[in-house]
Image 1 (cartoon, rainbow, N blue to C red):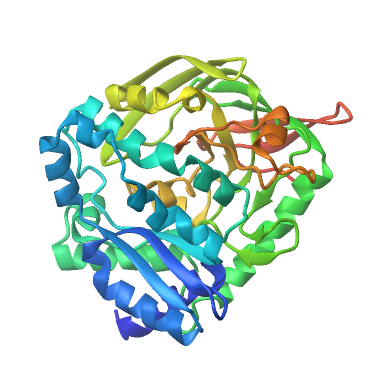
Image 2: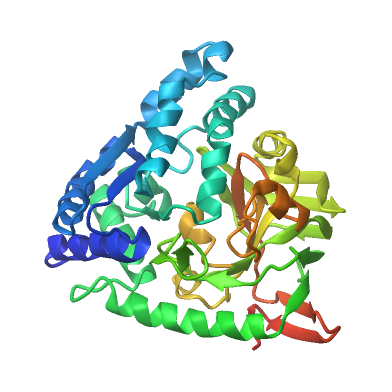
Length: 413
């Protein structure tokens, strides 16, 4: 790829100016990223300081070291989290920081580790950050998630290519999915967001209260959305509704809202594999009654799925429903990325766990008030794809009208 450094600078500018919405005098905290991402992080940090960042704080991790710890540390150690670890992340929320997650780990880098040990470690690193997670999902801080290619991840996606060729192919795919060009990191992105915003407005004018999804896989699920909830997509505000702009996900094709915790009924089948803490789950089925998962199965990773559902009480309820056209640019590539950030933007998806509160109206932003409107609370948020080329969605509006908003996997607005 010619002038690769220019492409990387443009991508960094997209993440900083449109992703986390970095402004002069603000600290950027990279919450978790691999040591193998250091070359791009040097570009990112330099661009951030040139944009006026007060500081750039990076929390490094290493998947191989994590694996060694998971295989050898005692269960008591895995279940404990020191205060400094939490403060080093959540503490910056009180210091006007913006937050970035930048992933490039191998999708199955933790495969084979005992599921109980994985579950203990995941609970120890998510439950103490539950309050911080709520602050993010209510858009009280600016935050974003993106990715960069890692060698093992690239070889998983493009196994027939050499390591160098696979990494370059993954970079090309990532740039394309984010509308980045050699000329600009933001021009194509801004036009894409404009089109998404138009569809958001069309959906919100319908005053939708209930969604009913069906497809040939066997999915037949109905859900109400939270009281006073609306749809959003592409961009958010800190705080809502008219604060500073940022984009929670780069790339993004999803228009989403928040299901009512207790008003989900029916069965859903996953349409693509998804990765959870280095393990793959595929062929999943979930059956809901009054919002709760009462039956589940998976062809691959059933034990991992069980660990997800047993994380806390809220893990068996939904926190997100997202509409993504099946002909999205990411899906048109015909590539399974084994990375939720990209794969969730190839098809409609749901999420188990914590709900997004920023789409729920009202002046009282306390957790208690939002829960009364149907918000689900959990320490985790796990996306999985259920969209197909024949997925349909019939919406029931507040006035009782029924409107087919999704037909054959595409918007019907």
